[in-house]
Structure formats: structure tokens, C-alpha cells
Length: 140
Image 1 (tube, rainbow, N blue to C red):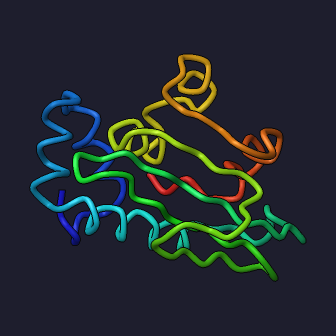
Image 2: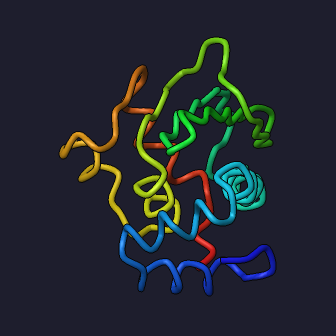
């Protein structure tokens, strides 16, 4: 994985990796760097038309070998802004490990299956958690 790779190429590369290989690759690049790239990509993939008048703060708690990395996604006024760190009062918090998070983002894992198997934990508005997936364009 690299900064210059387009999302489609990146998704294809990840698809062919075992979880161990993916974890080694993510660790080599640095978890913070990878997460920064993913959350910046979420801002770009946000579709204001699909979100409508929605206003929400979403928190992701992503478990890594370096500890839990929290990120906040703030949807308001037709925009999506992301930032490192926990939110004050998120509408929903999603907690999972970095491997499942990357596979979920690149649509190689199903959120409902991750939730049902206990790999994805949700706190807060579960109905909103299902809806918000549709607020982002699939780019690969």
C-alpha cells in the first residue's frame, strides 16, 4: 500500500493479503499514517446528497498493536470532517480491530456480519450505524 495508489488498486491489493500480511503491511506503514489516509478518503467519498440534512458525530475506536486509535467523523451542513481523537458525545461509536476496519472500509467485510460475530461493537444509535454506510460513495 502507498499514498499514490488509487483506492481500486489498494482494494485489490488488500483482497489478496492474508490477515497476517495485511497487519504486517499496516504496521510497517504506521497505523497513524494509514488511518489518516483512510479518514481523509472518507471526507472525499462523502455524498452530501445521500446524507441530506443529517447531522451526526461518529466515533471509531480502532484497536492496534499500539493501543486504541480513536477518530471522529462529523457530518453537518452537507460536509464531512474527520479528526484524530475521541468525540465528546458521539451518536454512535464503532469499535473493531484495524484488520476488520480496513476490510470494512474497502468493502471486503460486511458490517452486519462483523457485528453478529462480535468483531464489531456498537454503542449508541444502531439504526443510524446502518444508514451512514450509504453516505459514502464506493470508489473501487
